[in-house]
Length: 506
Ligand code: ADP
Image (cartoon, rainbow, N blue to C red):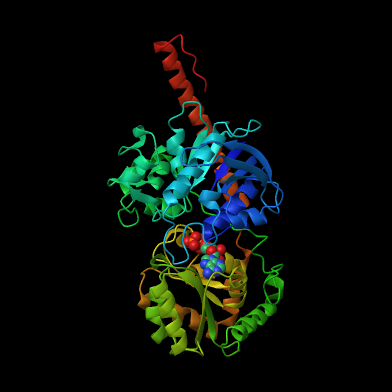
């Protein structure tokens, strides 16, 4: 199949979180299954630096750009996946985070930037940008590409569209006046289109208009249809539920492999687990914590936002640190949370190390060095850290929600007996639940070392490879393309009946 895969980030070119990981590895896995999948990304400076050889395909005159927009073609580094870049310096040539300014606030022209991106994608999808290539299906990801299915729905001869929700709480909401300023077609301003509580909602454009909607785990697909997790879009999602599928993300086993990871102190696998502790000692040493195998070393990696439950960790620390527990936290985000974490690290220098910032290498060193990874997310569409941690023999301690619930098996009598347990799960998102579950893990760690290693090995042997999930996407792509063709030919037939002289191309 020919698939245009549209995203605002993809590892190793640009990544702020799980979206980047997924969009860097799913296209590769689809390519390995024999498909011509091409990524399209904005040409941010770091992407231009890392992309390697690029050739100009065309130059487009697009609404919202004062200069012609160049479309470049290259390859996703380390793969044969095609890569289109949308080069509009006035929109994308700026340093740092793709969505945020240095002070953490959104770029004020994000609506203009991602509307322009969507218009370039539409041109490519309709075969107007690269005369040598036209996709059968356009796969869009998150709000930054939400306008694409909406704009394509205005065209009869269009490819099929699929929209993936990686996190429903990021909706791309802008004032109603932005709709007019962006010169979007009037037909799209309706309750079935882009209007949401009298705001312009990019995400809704994808959910309402795509031929199919997916999200990144089966549990999250159910959760977002409820008022608790639906952020006001639950009605629309229930309406679309016949065309809504949850597919659990996979993980990139090349990048996240303790046997060949260049970032960690000492490589290991299930047969050389004695080397894992070398990584623990290295992590303790470099983070300024007392070195030793006795304390249970917890890691936490992630964006410091309410979703991830970092405030719950903070509220559990006084009680947790009454016990032989150490913690290393890596993250950046909310400035108040950053400050609270640094204050806590000052109070507990022997037990808590906090690293504020984005550090890919340290993320790998924590995955390898920690005994457990603490993931108390209030909600988690899929979550990748728990998969990485299991691959590294680091036991996840997590809240039972979304993809965490779908990928971790809680240790209980049954799962212990049949060797399926891979972690410790708690049901309530509270500091008390975190404390109780960490102590459950600590007791297991201190008193049942052989059983601990069983947990470690079961997790390391789990198959979270992309090939399984990619095959599910492919099946869905084929189904969506067949449906879209059938619908289009029904529409064409009825038009022939009413307007026999007008040719309709599909
Ligand atoms: P989300 O997409 O909500 O941020 P995921 O668990 O799906 O959460 O993916 C997070 C990804 O981003 C993981 O690869 C994680 O290691 C990485 N990550 C998050 N914060 C940081 C950070 N401060 N430094 C390095 N990597 C980070």
